[in-house]
Image (cartoon, rainbow, N blue to C red; front, side, top):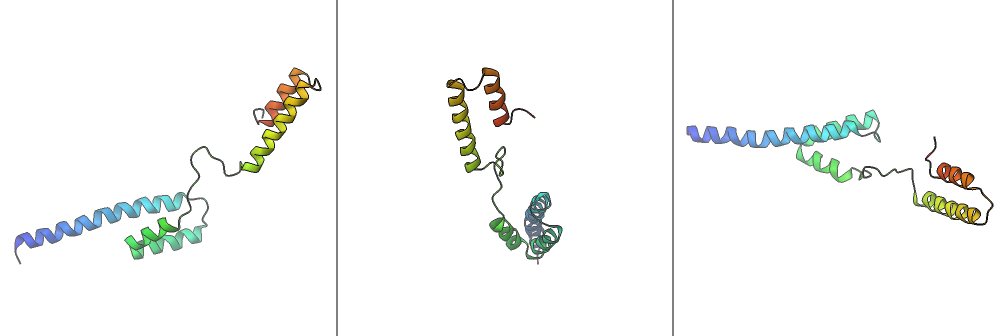
Length: 117
């Protein structure tokens, strides 16, 4: 076996090890930042990811739920948004009919939109 073969084998192991370690760090960072998993499930996922290497990483990402985009609240649902629109339309109609003063209209609208704490 020549010196070149030994160097090539060393480089091959480095080429495999560095990306694997980087992926492990990234996946484990993601795993431990998740708030939807219990500590026990995080430990099990950690074991699966480390023991099965690339396969475990692929399985983790395949089974991971898609996170909500930044700024989108999972608590604000379409039915709630529809209800707010309906209430706003009713509020505008009551204001137009003179049932509410301008200050009452503004205060109620701000409260409905969650602009007052």
